[in-house]
Figure 1: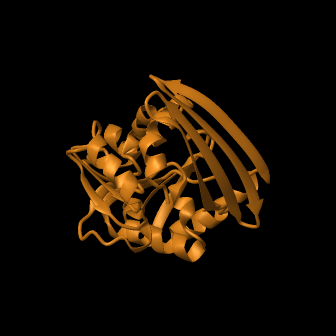
Figure 2 (figure 1 turned 90 degrees about the horizontal axis):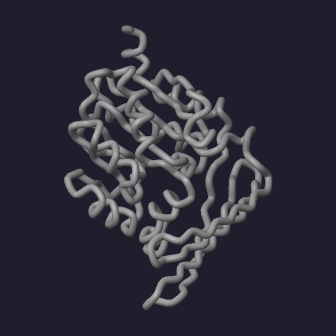
Length: 243
């Protein structure tokens, strides 16, 4: 789970490295609306600092977010003050309401440990959908497309703050173990360093599709977007059958 050090620089760092939250939100909103033109409400699961949610708010009348990390949720409350934000885990989603669109962005779904958890979470998503609702899941890398060893590094300067991010990812079986180190320097604060480690499950594309089906969702995979990871779009099987 992301701590306060990363929450503070999360969105700024990723945007400086080229991530376009506005464009990604517009793409996902457009794809969801192609299936549900009247969609007015959205829940962003694992909303982080609200980076996508802030832009989803320009496409939907009502947006809400769910986040497990208190530090990230605090940042999201500042970023999207009009949104209803929930502290919670996608593994036991129970909000007592339904949404036209449910999103899970930036590979966050891969924090689920196995196909049983994946199916359970997707079933919870389905239970929170309106009759014609759409689920959009931005997956982590598939097992079949993942790299066994991967090193990445960037240094960016924004205003008076310079940030360096260096990561090493190693694949062990069906898990991607990512160690990330950050160095942040700015006048008046000096230099600080912190590190985080993340374990992300490398599901195969087939495992994702099977989990959607077990959750009662009819799914389509859209390739070539979301930095190459693609996007899963799904509807309740019964609603899809009516069409």
